[in-house]
Length: 334
Image (cartoon, rainbow, N blue to C red; front, top):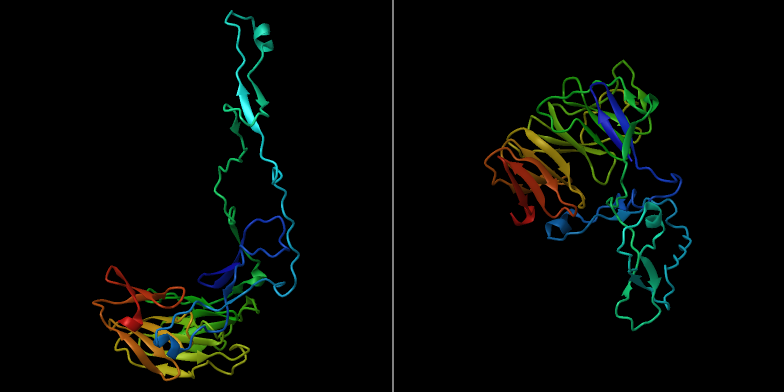
């Protein structure tokens, strides 16, 4: 499990580990089924009111291989044999004073088993282990930065107060807000780490001051950007990244126009294909059809800037923060 930490001049992968007896075996509690690359819904299905959970895939490399059944644990007592009844018998003590030597040799209370099923003084006794510490699969978790050879170094990260995100990642690329004019995003290949060249190299250029960006939920090479010119752009990253391009990537595949003020946030839908949601300084939140380059839904009942529209697990409702209030909204009903 890795976390990417961005600094002023580097991106540091932090490896998160949970102690285990064996690190070679698959740990299902650490790597549960996760959302796969296939959308659960189309745009038209979602607009019609359908809701589905994400299509899950297994992270187990041996999922398709037969798994040996686990051996059944032996019970403390055979199924046909009930646990023994235990009876505590108090032994009468001599009331006369005793010397220390006599006191140490005096009989102590004894415990004997009662074989009589009709003995009313006998009681069931089943030993139980005391659970003082709460059981958890994630105890003693710790993070450790990786070696410099596995980091990205010599970066020129741009981090300003109006930016929503400085770093985003897909399964293939890492996007980092980059210094320079024109709203730049450096696209780094996750498989190629190390020190970046000191000379300039091709980056993604949006054409206006960058405020937010996001990678597609289902396509690792699709990225959406939003700037202070109220325009949202969709870019397709070449298969090998941007390093081999002769110049910056400036040509977008889609342009979404309709907001009257700067973009505040850009986020893709978690289960439906071809949907991106944006919030703007014009006090609106819009849901866009990327292929048609048109807003399908506009939420305009905000009296201040709407921040951070966040979807639930199924993408059926969202939470939006505005003027000290968090609103829970089903966009299709509002």
